[in-house]
Every structure is written in structure tokens, then in C-alpha cells.
Length: 156
Ligand code: MG
Image (cartoon, rainbow, N blue to C red):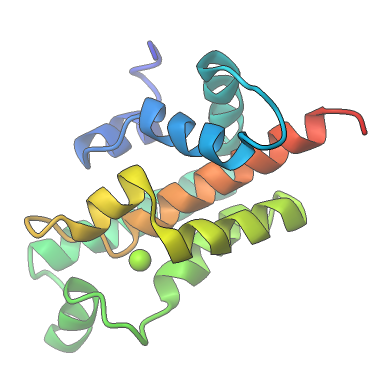
């Protein structure tokens, strides 16, 4: 992926996530339906992350993770985000603002990824050295939305 000027690609990379990691998730989601290539995935991922609403959601989510890491928020909310409390659901709600632009296939795949946390999602979720409370849901939302775009690109 050459597009180093893309602010989202840059930001995700800073947080340890590449477009290839997300493409792997998309291929995993689509494996029973369509044989797709990395190149095809990357092209569709870019379409998902280049929408203004998606850019805003991704930047806000990552900013909150980073602020919690640096203890920049009021203590109560800082602790909730840092500890990824199980009843805190705003990370999923923020990510849904991406998913909701891509229909029901995106929605069901998002729930599936959130539940099983495969590959990069599990990796960032279990990373003890950084706060990724919002990041794991953002990754799941991008992958689920991309899978939906690909599913809809095939005629029945
Ligand atoms: Mg989360």
C-alpha cells in the first residue's frame, strides 16, 4: 500500500495496524462466498476509509484511546476507557457509524468480528502496552463494511 499521504492509513499504522491486516479479515469474512484478492480488498478498504464520516469516527476513536493512554481525560472516564470496562459500549457505537453506511451485511459481520475477535482484532485487544478500546471496533467496522461492499459487487 503506497498511499502514505492518507491520514487514516498513517494513523492506523502508528497504532500497529496495516491495510493488509484488515484485508486479511475481509478475506476471512468472504472466504465461503467469493474468492477475492488482497488488491481487490485494499481498493475497497480505501473506499470505506475515505468517506468523511468514517474518517471522523476513526480519528475520534483513536484520539480517545491515545488520550486515555496519556491520562489526559478526567479520571473517571479515563479509567473506564483504559480498562475497557465491559459495560462501556460507546466504542462499538462509534464504530457503528461506519458500519451503518454499508447495510445489513456490514452489521452482521461487525457483530461476528466483535464476538470472535480474530487475528489483528484479538492482537490489539490483548495488547497490554497500549489502550485500544476504540481501535478494535474501528478495525472490525472497516473490515465488515468492506466485506459488505464486496458482497454487493457480485450479481446474484
Ligand atoms: Mg472495544
